[in-house]
Length: 253
Image 1 (cartoon, rainbow, N blue to C red):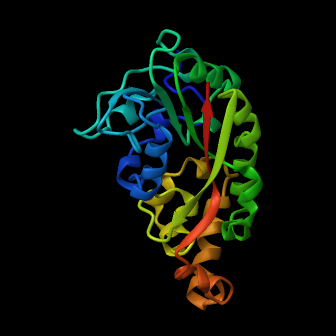
Image 2: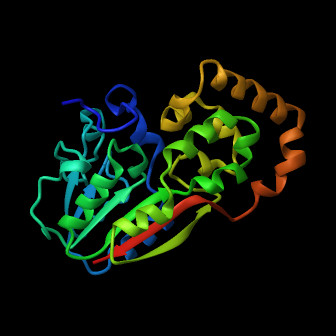
């Protein structure tokens, strides 16, 4: 079996994620609230452990050894496995969480059905809404990245229908000083996206055509140096939050 279960090979390209993709406490609070009073939680596509609660019994499942190795001492060890075949009985846990992972699965519907199968209570999914991606200024500099992400992101309504009899969808506001280094987290700090280590911790750059990332760096660097980016977007440097593509979907049995 392959060491990665979806469209991005974290085994080969996952080094350094934990340093850049640090959970943001405000997003974390929303995720933990959505878990309700669950005492046992399965985290699917757990990666380095971002957004896992530390005050509940957590089972973490992650296919890539490179990601499992980045889990800190405050996180439970993760077991190897894939969303499409969870090694748990029906209704084995109080809740399931899947954080920014469903767009990478090889069989989305099979994975979502498994989340619902093993949870007695809520299924909490944090995912991106592809329809909102072009609203981000990055579309002006890396349209190939935005287009690729739109193809990867499944419709939010599709996810919601498959994780519960009822489901609620909530927009997640991104704070200006967000500590989780996904692309939209830097809506007001464009210079950060010029850092190769930051881009390396964002799988989306791996789906751009050859040469497109270098063109992005050249174009954004020039516009920051000339002040052209600020002419159009300076208000974002002090805007407290940004309604990005991120959506919290909570399905109930």
